[in-house]
Length: 255
Image (cartoon, rainbow, N blue to C red; front, side, top):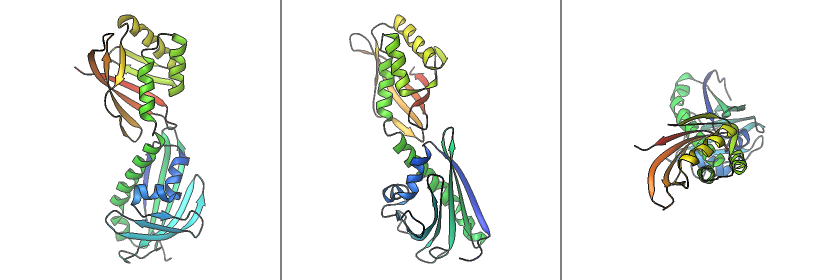
């Protein structure tokens, strides 16, 4: 490999824990999920890296360094030889724990500036795909979590309500809607109890699938009265912690 004096750097925050993100560089099934069907990796120093993009372009290289779950280094280049051949550039990926999940820093070193500049937007796009794929895996249970959160609003026992929230949310869970601005599970549990006094016998039910992107989920819901009729609708915006629990909720009532 020649002098690689031209480098691009890209930094993204992935809403998933480091172990999950790392697997998306070392497990062939997960590599293919964000780089393209048929892509694969042999996760050991000297092991093959093969990438087949959805448009059919092929790239190849080899693993140089591997330190789970913090770092992977591999060579990279194109089967066609353009703009450079297999293994002719060097990619270094560093993963650091972050309050929102994982801080991913990618550095790609090239022999010339033109090749570097050609890859800036490509990596911007590809790392966004990775962030989405990793977050979807990390938060695969979001629909069940959302349903359990809605069910808590029908729980009349205070201790059970608190326990239900503690099972699905972080301790300092924030909640905001037209009538609340609470911080912490205890405060939200008390608010739900007060809401039940004003709306006895109602229940919240999810309406349609949960929409999720990189740790933020939209949950549409309806309010049903004792007779089962829908009285109101709304949407919860869930912010998810790296481990999949709920970190914050904003409730938006439909007008």
